[in-house]
Length: 234
Image 1: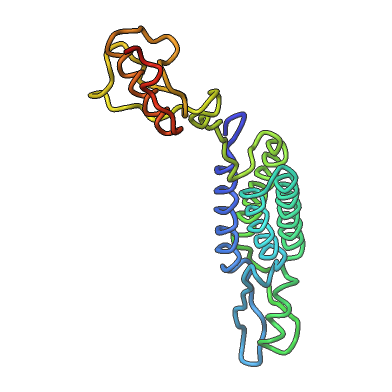
Image 2: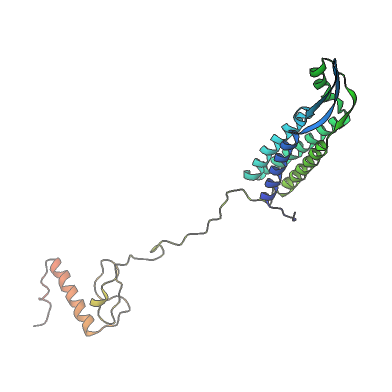
């Protein structure tokens, strides 16, 4: 993995370890023979019974993977520590079985013959070693999660960009709607402050614009009840 492994890779690797551990523990880990009244009978014990702590550790790993996948920095660190603890649990359980492989078989022999006696040495399958390797892999994933928790971003975090300013938010007086271009005199401004009359600032005075301005002023005078013709020359 790279120097800054992706969170997704660590989570997926942990989930693969969990699935493999559950599959491995369902297989036979140790087998042997037990004497009976009619001879001998083969007895075997699966990993779920030979080392039940391995199954429990696999479930802990699954929960830790979930915490690493969706948690914040503290949750990711706790998930990584949980992975380390589960990995240690797997290794210790496997080591205990390797130290005394006959222990789990004695109970199986008692169910067959009624006595806790075995004939010969128990045979170990390769699955306990595979489980130990998987546990070590989960421990590595836990170390990576703990060391990378500060660099991983919280799942679901979104980067929001600043929105555009609302139209007219930085302008001064509100502007009225632009008049129809067909009725706008040449040289006259196409925008006018709301409620204002006369030429807009910066408009070039032309005969057409002067006539339009006078007409607008006359209408305003009529609206106020005044006679616009009294100020006009005869």
